[in-house]
Image (cartoon, each protein chain N blue to C red):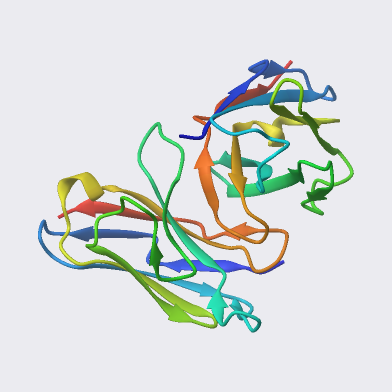
Length: 119
Length: 113
């Protein structure tokens, strides 16, 4: 059974960088056919896809965040990560990692990590 | 971006009755190469992540009760719960994966009447 778990700081200062890691168990990031994605949820904007990465390292980002987002994969640790720069209070959200096939629904989700942007 | 609009925003249905949630996309989600609609439905209960219920607009995920069904094609889709159970109280979302950026509907809150 595939499992994903988000980790990282729950509080980030404005203008700083939000950094989260998703640890995958039950499948190898490098050998499966999955894409690995990040989605965030806020009361105001609902669910918002941030971006996804394939095991080869190819990425696809939401244009609304593309200038500030980097998603990378660490196959040795079976993890992938999210970095979101120049954060503001608008980036306060529940951040989920999830997996999907190419152009497919999100199959498995982590439990989510609440990140608050505040000084 | 493809805009996904759900209706209603909230819905109260009696136990055992039918619940119907609608989802409309601003662009056709019918993928011509396989004749499938790139539309998924999720269920989210409080304190939990969304759970995939249906993909390709009408295919139930493994383990999902058969009282859940999806229908529609092109730009108009429906999630139907044939006989509402207490455990179905949740927020339901539709999502298109036809093209990036993948986008979600605003959610429909389903409650017991």
